[in-house]
Length: 91
Image 1 (cartoon, helix red, strand yellow):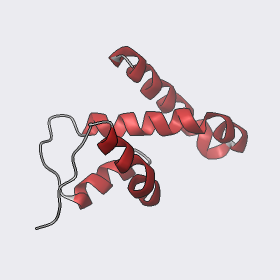
Image 2 (cartoon, helix red, strand yellow):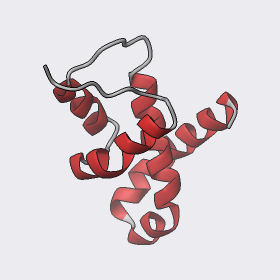
Image 3 (cartoon, helix red, strand yellow):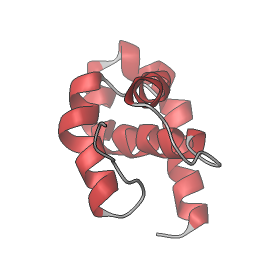
Image 4 (tube, helix red, strand yellow):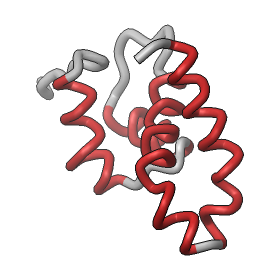
């Protein structure tokens, strides 16, 4: 995916976010776009970061409207698998 396509997804997500919260129909049809956009927002907040503690990462995810369970079970493993982030072990 190109950077311009990613920016387009984030832009659509921002515009749909207000509607998604109040309209179940939109939420049903655009959930994948919203999740991709929210993940893009999370990734853009990680730009220029080299190391983060989990708590800060979770706060950034929450700011991007990503719930903790979705973050742990789906988003983090996908970002690790695609090489966007590395998760270290606790010392």
